[in-house]
Image 1 (tube, rainbow, N blue to C red):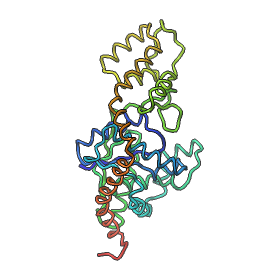
Image 2 (image 1 turned 90 degrees about the horizontal axis):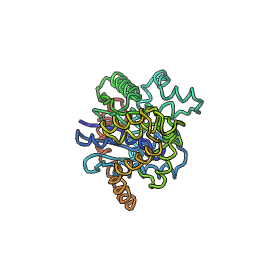
Image 3 (image 1 turned 90 degrees about the vertical axis):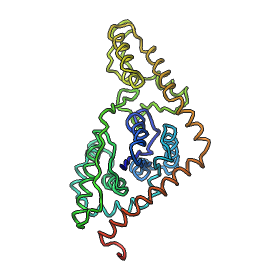
Image 4 (image 1 turned 180 degrees about the horizontal axis):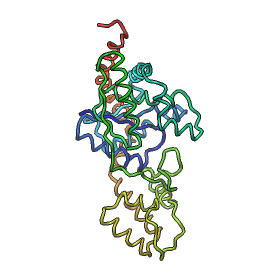
Length: 323
């Protein structure tokens, strides 16, 4: 089974990225052939600074390796090291209806929020389809809110296969990550790379402490019952067992639990959970050549998988001299 997913280098990886995707990706290495890419082409719709893009690609790669991705078992590569993805994206564009792209939830949300729209943002689903179809992926892990992306990819693949009368593009299946909770940020909104509400697992301890202590809570006094639906309780729950959650939530509802106490315990648990990964992350940061070797080696392996797919697509579409 071939499993594929990607992550954008549009900001520092945070707890939402880890619990929402990276942790599952690492676990999936044992299930089949894992292919994971850092989507720097995709980041161009939001991030416009070249040096920052390159820095963030390296940061994301180091984070993945620190979290347990094994480059000997799985493939980790930089998207822009596969120019084939852009060729396939153009080919797929020619069979993708404008109406399909206009129905994209992500596109409609950005338009509704007044985000300036360029062609890259509009055609984003086609590039995403190329990423997936180029490797003949069997399974793509996604959250429920991303399911439409897979449906669009399947639709585009079917249209190409029908147009050229050849089933050369495999239709991927979504792996819906049902057990993934939305990780709240320090302000109660969904944790985001683009908002100042992140908790990044590899920040220095001092910076993490400041961010944890700044988590927004209500003004309920220590002795009063607490609302356990607040972001602080949700974040703490990520690092607690079911029994620990039941006990602490009962204390909170009964009154007598202070937010300061809970924040200190959250920080301690966060540092303990990510402790071994933080050590690996520090070692990886000292070896930039190793990191680049991993990405380039991953790209070579990814290109070997992509080559026969693109060749079959070109042959079906009548591109090049033919056989």
